[in-house]
Length: 289
Image (cartoon, rainbow, N blue to C red; front, side, top):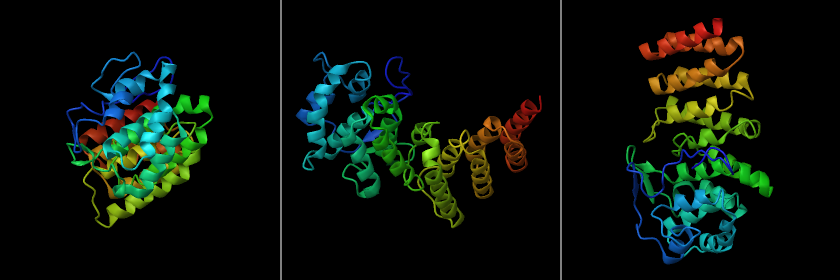
């Protein structure tokens, strides 16, 4: 969805309906009420992608007229799972407590969530719904501040971090962790990363690149707890030397300010492939200037 909140919103979110790498497993024809609420813009025109409506709300207060019916729709368990998922995405993107509560409940249920598997990422053939929910948390930052629902947003973020060792989030979850939330979720991230490392150590594998996902979570802590970030980086790099993981972990050396982060960058250069060594050498040279 979007990087920042109201006003000049930079959109980086891929459409829920139409992205070629996504496959909707449930029915592609939405329930009529969700059609009215999320497939019709605020001027009454039909849209193909609910993101058009969700993101339009960042600059159009008329979205508020849809909060109550969307909340009722989400909380009615007999409604189609995929359509309830869309309602959850919208409400969470708009920093509504009902949306955040539904995310917490979804994280607690994991693959037992009603809409789990309704949206599938084609590359890995894994559930994509948690990616979208993390994106909703990410873009709701400014709305949450305006509505004083930061506590609900943080609870949703914590719940998602807690399952990131077994559920796919792409880059969205790490991107939802910024300076305003990193301190609060630092312990949660560390615990999740260490569970993921333990799983990798014991040969457990996920259908997605778990090491890369964990590395992005590690890097998200660099501005608030560099010591923990470096330590987690070493722990992960010792068990996963895949280029994708090490290249992401190189951001620790790039963004860190201590000797420990610089030494970590040099360490990556000793265990990585040619590309990793080249990046590590560039970072070392830059920090030496």
